[in-house]
Amino acid sequence: MPKYQIIIDQEKCIGCGNCANICPSSFELVEGKAKPKKIVIAKISCEEEAADSCPVNAISIKKTK
Image (tube, rainbow, N blue to C red; front, top):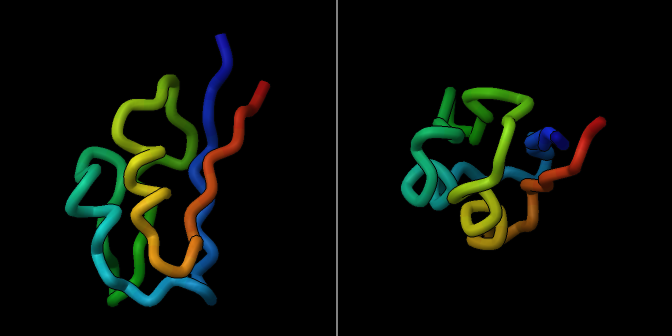
């Protein structure tokens, strides 16, 4: 079963909070920047929608082994 890694480019992140509002189970704001609550997740639920909502495309989700 594949797992997924959440990657947030901290230099691009503007701290708008869209990801945390859409998917609070996986994202939070810490010191004004988005952070993943878990770096590796077992399945995708709201994470892709949260990544798509990022106005600066700072979030990527990659399939891992």
